[in-house]
Length: 557
Image (cartoon, rainbow, N blue to C red; front, side, top):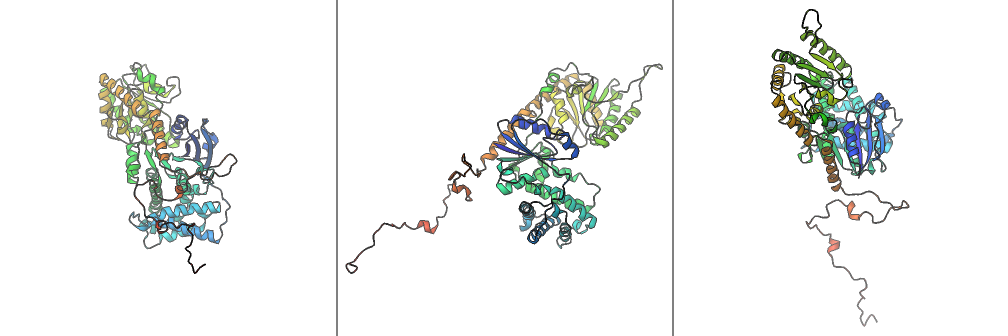
């Protein structure tokens, strides 16, 4: 089977966020061939290069979404008219309220595929999307009688901002990937995210009928709702309409949709995904690096709490530090190890704030007037002599804490489970789904509840051991690479089995093989149904014998 793997900012780039699970998937399915079609996230990512690729990756084609030069395509009068019509329909679909029962419910899809066909016929769409024609079409749609109130309030800067965003979002339409020897040659397209990553899969399905499988560990539409807080209401409304309709079209065309957890699944259902197409596939993790720690609990310090992750405001380390202040009142000898580096400039600032808060809450404690005290909170990073690996970080404490206020699938929490550690977590994202009943869960932004849960585990070693063993057993059952690869292998086979093969077959000399594809394969309908169909009139008449001689008479002689 030949798989077209569609990624955005991930595999095969070294710094790709979703690159690790994609690499494990490709290596685990070595019986299949993979063609990778990847969008890069920035120039720095492209400069870092790719990860080593296994032999089953036959082709890698990349394109930047963060920049696009002028394609130099000059439209004629007919092409300009086609662009104005399709872009105007797209803008009208964004400016009016979505009504599934209305005939114009498919306006967005019709306009999207119309623009894709125009880009394919003319060689590009970038210059047209940047033209004044696009802005004027968007303005007419916003001023139409049925336009939403937020759209009618759009001003010129708002229209320019929306047009610029649409130009960037629709750049995949101008790529040369949609040919018979490109995405038309694969058996299945697997988009590793929604949004831009799934758009080439939609076009491959439109042009060639290639089935599409969409995997979302974090719903892109939800991410969009959480961004652009400083934009005007008109810009937010129009962009939300675009991403919402693109997500709905993606879910409608996909053969299967694989959320990574129940939290993402609920979002997909709210965005229009058919429940019959949904198959939850949890992320797969390599359990081998954690086996030694998970099988032995002797190295764990019974008086140490461990937090592991990327330092950023969403992790809410401030609440953790205030909770630890309450913990020290109940258990004075407890230590807190915060292990992880900052995420970007914002993370660096947040780390500095947390260091200052720790110094304020826990001044150096000295045993006497002539000795120097040590702060019970330490900030460390993995890779040093004390913590060479991630497994060593979890092994350094008896209880692992997660204090986030926003979380998708808690990978760090699963790592702690593989290490056999008891956990205390906030109830966000897919935390409850991941740990089941093998850990303690408290409300987010509640330092007192977090402190009480940690104290209860610190005082009960037997309970810690029971929860840690149950957590490791659950992680090995549900969250390993093996179960992830097996799930996708089954979905690949099921998807392709439902799709008829319509690829042109050639002989050794490169000529088409006659009768290689049955003629009825190109006729719409299901020819295996038992329901009888109407027989044409010409087929119902009795046949006429061509060799029957004409009657003769004596007069004719």
